[in-house]
Length: 331
Image 1 (tube, rainbow, N blue to C red):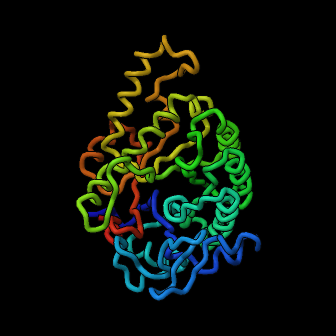
Image 2: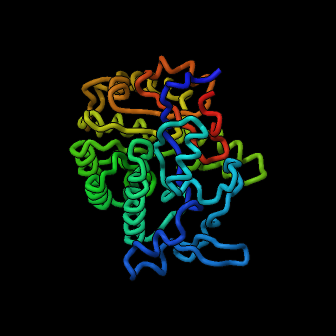
Image 3: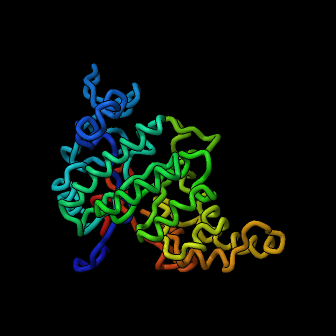
């Protein structure tokens, strides 16, 4: 059983990983004074590798463990025409595409990070231009500094980007604290949805390939978004900006109804003793109005969609990662 052939399928969370990117992406785009430390491909005894700030990051152009077994995979997801072919094979009309800049490159220097993100965003706008109806590669704004994030958000809006991702664990203050108010003001004014993706790691379970710790880590990492969810709700950051749409990428579904119920319960319990910011509506109402979550392939979570809100749930294929539903997404 699968979707009817005439029903359009849109994936809300797919990926553009660093190993599929053009090898000259940053060398051709970042300011000359930063190129020695910026991401670049170097020849090694193991073949071409991405290097950044003197660190090896990822092979270039070679499929890695944990990715789908597509023919001649290599650079395909980073080439618009090849990616569209893979989407056609999967019966997926359009993709929202998350970048690798936070989880894979981990650029430490703030100036270099901002310049590298800007270069990626310029390239991503060109990538989307191949078919703006079907390709929505998210811009990636700096998460280490509120002003840098706001400035880049304004800039990418002028490039035609229709969504932006932010690394929620990069700054000294979380993105729901007061220093980030100008950024969220700009997001509302521009009407650009802001995305955060799973990524902040559990503190005690450290993944190792070939170890029991890998499935243990993967089993719980989506739930690490719980702090971000409750912070964005209780701080008033969303309540005070009702036009902002906030997306939790690869969050999964099963844990969401419990947290929504828990927020409403604690909102009532602590309301009278809260002195800094009291919500004027229930957390569940803020969630229903402004927060969106994505899932790939769940049984329990799908049964719980009525508890979450059918308009707040988006399906994703997670192409080209190993647990993707590609090329059987319609089924």
